[in-house]
Image 1 (tube, helix red, strand yellow):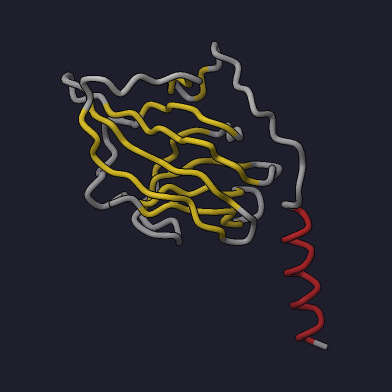
Image 2 (cartoon, rainbow, N blue to C red):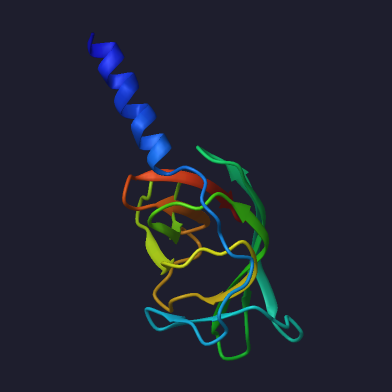
Length: 148
């Protein structure tokens, strides 16, 4: 009976974060927690620091991620061709691992497609080298990318 109830609870959590529509476009004037979002990004003259590819976790997630740094030491997280399912409370985090160790939120807006996001100045990219697509409401990892 205990195993049945545990399985039932797990199935409920997964179904709570089931597929919804995620728009492929992003409002260019959108500003989330002081982080400017953009559909276009020009890497010319910027230093590529880290890169990686998304892997599935509980949901199918694909695309690539890169972090660039400009001459003023401002860093930009670039998501390219991101494709994931929607959820009720999706966030993008930088963390030390897939378990949210020492994480920092990048945005509370997740959009399929390509987008550039400002990386907070207090992010430690030597340690926080995982990009997570995380459903905060149900503590579910949709997908992740380890950057090298």
